[in-house]
Length: 385
Image 1 (spheres, rainbow, N blue to C red):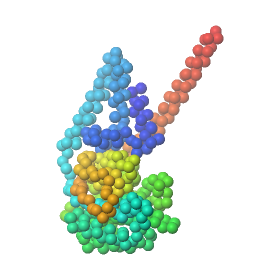
Image 2: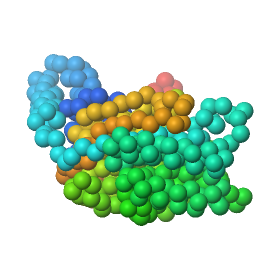
Image 3: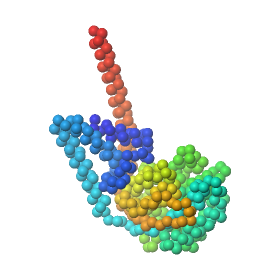
């Protein structure tokens, strides 16, 4: 009985709602409880949050049963210990790694979508924006500049030209660039990001792999492999991984990042209805995987967190001026988590438990219905006699 509510809550989340409506996301501000994600993932937080009220209700129902009181009190005591241990982890953990000064900008497509009556950004406008923002970021000693998802709307032909210009600007200004492109073609469209080092070398590219149904049906799906880039900045070695927006909301995908990743970048394009949800999902992923997170978005909350969920930067909505550049000190930090180490067996066990619990609840429901029918039949027979 006590486990019925937490188990049903997990089933509803996994089967009906998915990760985007996980109960654990409501606890992102509870930094002590948040640390549980580093040990067993966000589902453990959901289970714990759902279990406590269930225990309290059961203790009230069985308040005259001394044994039940002891069992319930023990569960609450263990919960208190878990919370306290999370508090120790959060408050006494040393800040790992080094901070990188990073810049981000929205790109000219922002203005087009805010003012649909205007013409789409042409190549010259894209080029001017790219040059201006890169030079400004470098002049302010930023080491990496990141553009929001779909910052530059280009054709297939213009894609290569703009990328080549980004390569040249990176080398000329001694800065890393993560440029995000909305590539439009007659038969092929791509939501793509290209990562370039300060020598003007293309390190990797990535296409969005989890496309939003209906909204992004015209895009070609990516290969589902999160890039891992080993770089050296100011004499320090970093492993930088990145994906695009919606991709980072799936924990079973996010956990496939390189185990040495100490900085995860997620250029995004949120909207008002999800802006308070998206940053929580991605911040939860940073705690589960033990890396620093930089999430710049065209709309919504742009945030920076460390591997323990400390939010050092949070800015709501980029302004409409696409030439404006914003700055944040981002912790390129790495801490090992138990969840990251055991995620493969955890995924298997989760699958077995979820489907096992589903079939068991169906079995219980069927048995209850049968018992109810038998009782009604017995009652009817008694009345006839």
